[in-house]
Image (cartoon, rainbow, N blue to C red; front, side, top):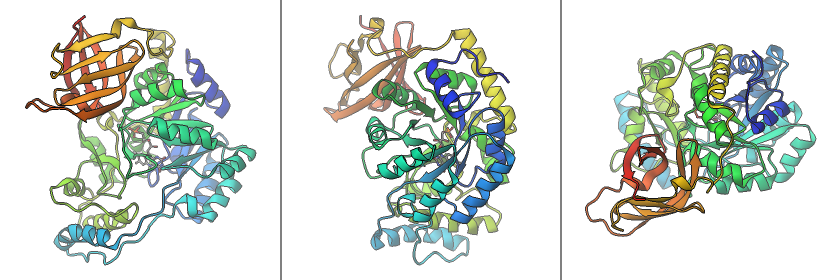
Length: 471
Ligand SMILES: Cc1cc2nc3c(=O)[nH]c(=O)nc-3n(C[C@H](O)[C@H](O)[C@H](O)COP(=O)(O)O)c2cc1C
């Protein structure tokens, strides 16, 4: 397959730097990625990756050695840089108590204490030395950042570094620490959100809004992740200025992945809207296909899950007990993004080639995409919605300011032009008055212009309403 044709400049630069034929990265996926999957992606011209955040150093060494026998091309290794678990015996006991009836129904003993099943890379000198010794072409970090001295040591060793970020604030921290590129992980993404502080505010930006916010604000290449399943999707994020796309869920369905049969059945049968964000499985927000454990976590009166990864210890025990009785889905960590219903079960190399062909077709149809900048499209500026200040409306100013109301909250934020609409970012809602109206605009993430109306979508791509133009 030739290089992706017509690809815009940032993607050509990143692909050239990493030795890729296509601006396509396979997401590192702890428990699901493996040397076979990563090698197939790399051999097809993308970037294969191993998620070693949940592995012991010996397991990781073995997987890296196997990957190197399967390909001489570039690959990434990924580790977890989370804050070590905050122990809180009352919180842990309450979570065990919440799960106790589930264990009892499975005739399995509930745990008496929870273990920290993964050591954070931040406090694991063995993993730190392993990564430096392995000198992978690319190292990537989830949930936070190693310290700048360590990043500098990796750079001296010739390793290209990437950090997952979910907000502009995290992107600034990553850039200041000295990483080489950012993964902009939208709320659509399967698996754990890479939020640095799981107890902090999370604006839950969709991938388009996040990419559109980061591209003008950073010098670093931005790699888009979240709900990207096709070459058209990749074309869309490149048009926003992304340098590449990182796909996870799309590759879980590949036969090379380590997903078991139950996971594959879950993916095959999941419809649109089958996933949700939950902290019930591991203690950190993550998106998976809704199951009994996730429902339990959001049930009224349910205790707050123990801190990550303590809750994961309980979740894994519950899953093992149910699986032993033939139920491999009710308590499983079947991580998947909002695009799960569009997953195609293809060998990973074929999937990369198909994505590249689709991307080339989309680029040929639409011309080489170019990122568009704030305020260059005065046609979108103006007032959308009611003339009454307390009715739903949005005002999009030429300088990128967004103001308005959803009938209940006063909204303030920023907007950016998309090829066929607008992305909203940093929209904050302040309670104003609630005259019995819906609060439907508070979760707005993007908008599409159609026949003089602004159709508004939430971060998961659900249509939440529409506003007529008043100009
Ligand atoms: C099964 C699964 C496991 C994941 N594990 C990791 C991981 O170990 N490290 C990481 O940085 N991201 C992980 N992610 C998140 C991905 O890096 C990426 O952000 C996400 O897959 C993109 O969204 P998508 O699944 O809709 O393509 C995982 C995602 C999935 C689906």
